[in-house]
Length: 73
Image 1: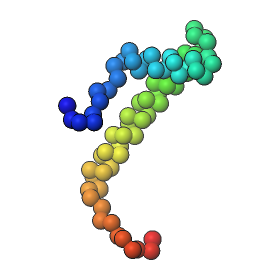
Image 2: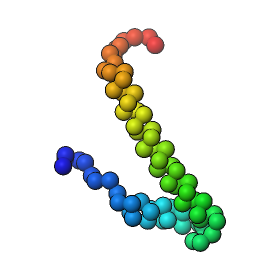
Image 3: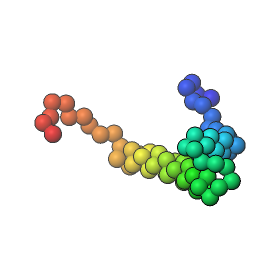
């Protein structure tokens, strides 16, 4: 394992984080609002993962970019 790298959380840990986040928001378990909160948390995770993948692909496609030090724009 690379220094500074941590393994991704397990699905159980992710679920526990989502439940804790929704409870901190003041939503009671076993309510429609709580279930919707859990769905939104999972959707946000998927969107963040997609954004990271797109940024990686974009950086690979564009390649290294020159830095223009002292330029006016």
